[in-house]
Image (cartoon, rainbow, N blue to C red; front, side):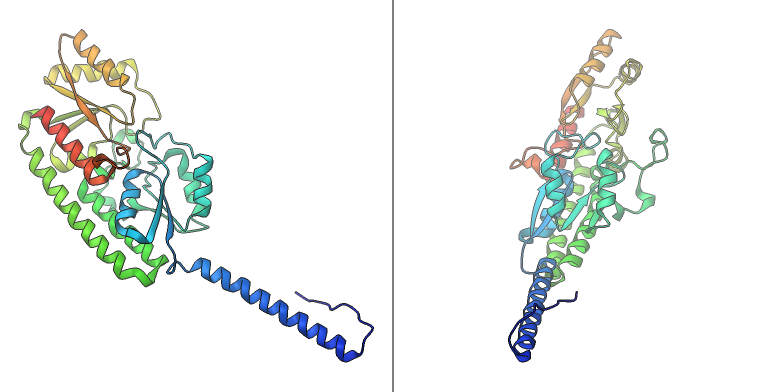
Length: 323
């Protein structure tokens, strides 16, 4: 930018000196602005502001980031990510964030396009991208897309740890060792959790290992831990179950002598109660074995408000009802 000094009536030297002074001040001002930009880009001296979509994703970010991150979680308890719309606060937090973590595989439904656009402005990481494609499930009824509910297989969810670690390290390399250490600790905790789930599900008699839920979110759990899984709704809750779906599931329960089915915290209970009534109308009986956390975790500050606590709750609830 060219700066033209004002005209003065004094001697030429005075005019030259004024121009020089103005030029020096402008250079100093631009240098100061540049310094502020560099400070804002350097995350080593401040907390990193993270935005995460679901509770499960936020939990990985908190465990790996530790006291280096301030995590804003968009979706709280009981929220269905398939149908979620961003709030005004969400939009503000996304704009102010240093990095964004989300599940991916279109779990976030309507938010997906926004998150993809944000990737051109700041680090925006779909954690499910860490899972090898040959480990993903592609149910025929999901129109050629992958099932996004990967957290129900603890071994698959472990892949997301390194994805979060690497993204935080790229943003804040000075604390790479801290992120690596916390990632290792969290990985060990999840390995123990997976072993617990295997041990507990093996206590269910083989003929009773049938998991009936409100929507088909538990496919990865079934594949990993040896359960047959049936859901009233499909993988996404965007479309409602029909009367025919209710009757078909009721027939399956009666024919298989299934003793219990489960409601979900993020899906209206009325859907499963309709199945229960249809079973009775066909001369059968099925109990509601308890509430499972599927697309959202429990309340903050509770055991179920963490990924480990949520998985343990689900395992214990299923085992108690089916065993």
